[in-house]
Amino acid sequence: MIKVLRIALVVLGAALALYSAWCIAFLPYGIGNYLPGAAGLAMFGAGLGLPWILGYTASGRRRSARLVITYLAAFGVLSFAVMLAGVWLNARGVPENGHDAVIVLGAALAGDVIPQGFQNRLDTALGYLADNENAVVVVSGGQGTTETVTAASAMRRYLVENGIEPGRIIEEDRATSTFENFVFSRELLDEHFGGEAYTVVYVTNDFHLLRARVLAWKVGVPGEGLAAPSQWFMLPNYYSREFLAMIRALITVVLG
Image 1 (spheres, helix red, strand yellow):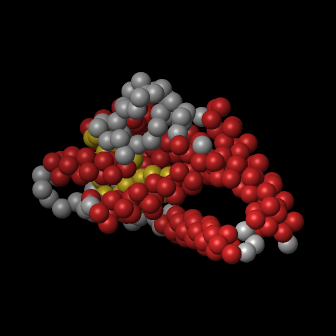
Image 2: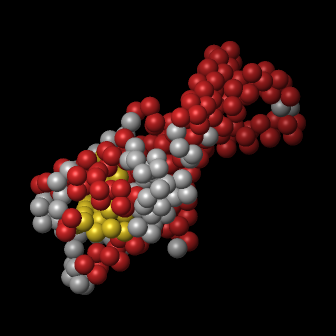
């Protein structure tokens, strides 16, 4: 059993480290590029040193320390599994037609180019907008340090190129986080609808929808989430980053 665990840790750890190396080399900077590698190196080291670790912590206070570390690791794995289950369940629903507005949550650009995962959000929004011609759309996202335009302006350009009338589009170009996406988008929609009640569909990638739902509830944005697909090979990057971001979102909800 110990031998099988060692092999599993070493192989999975090496795979995650190589995956991170690929992300760092070919993708724009992001903490998600590094997190799988950090976890992978820890697993790789634990696998190589497992017999020594077990021998060193076999008795006395060292045994108590080993139990604490084991429980913490188990709690971390369980928490990650719960998050994955929540992400999967939240991405299943499809909003009904008839909402008054669509909010497309921004993501990182490559200069002024919309990457494929980000484009999936816009394509999903286009499908809903085609079925709901009276709905306006808020494109929400500011400009990062490595970007040459705001995410909002890039999204506006893409939607216009794909048949959305410019008059249906509201640009929100200040947000630098999901929380700000909702805060600033709500301000613009409140103004647009003149204080009248409205409901929205907020669009983001499937891995992000659970956190978006939590923050939309916190901000008081009335509506439903709509999940866009993610690229399968990016999931280790996305989910590792999302785990930390979800913890931060829950702290925001609890502490205000």
